[in-house]
Image (cartoon, rainbow, N blue to C red):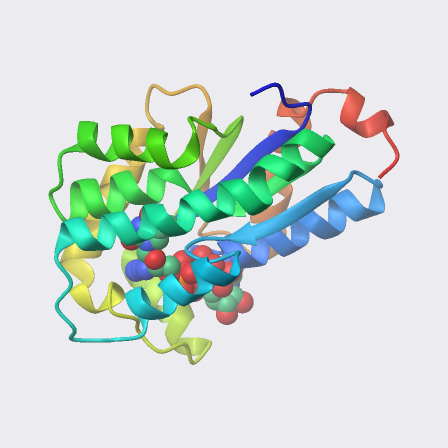
Length: 216
Ligand code: Z5A
């Protein structure tokens, strides 16, 4: 795909601060008049939000791992088609709350699905659109769950798998970040402001100069 935009993804376990940091990043970009948009997964489109309800809103419901993956990828296909690709074609920065790494960490490592199959199916669903930069917000699982508890957020079906399972997901993220120069690990245990500063520094270094000269 010939795109002029920049695809930035925030990843990490629950409570790591992805939504918070996407908002801070958006404010920072707006102040610099950098054209950008934000979306979340699963979701970000009408069909994606409907799939999100099926996947997350039924604690205790048995969904086979393959079904879970295919539903997530069906939502991602719509997200790429309706949101990501148009944003990149316009030349915007696309900020996504989760993308392919979530599927590799949760469905690949967490559920034990073959990572090569996850990659191949993801490439089919996305037309091989790849993030330019992925930031993995790294935090111990207990700290992330404590933040969610403080915020009064109920546990969804996937979080219901428990801490040991989620710890495997965190380790998978750390492994995926290792050795891939498009993926950076960010220490998410600091304050919101400090994590925000670390993220902005990384984004400033990675974002081509031309984005700072354009007017959104
Ligand atoms: N999933 C999957 O399995 N496979 C896939 O391919 C995809 C997804 C795409 C999505 O859940 C679920 O789908 C997720 C993985 C699965 N399930 N699990 N488990 P979600 O959309 O509900 O998002 P989440 O990541 O699980 O939860 P979250 O709470 O939205 O996390 P967050 O966005 O990283 O955190 P936050 O909302 O920014 O912050 C949470 C609270 O912490 C909030 O009160 C903040 O004010 C506070 N916070 C944030 N940063 C800080 C710092 N630095 N210090 C202190 N407090 C902070």
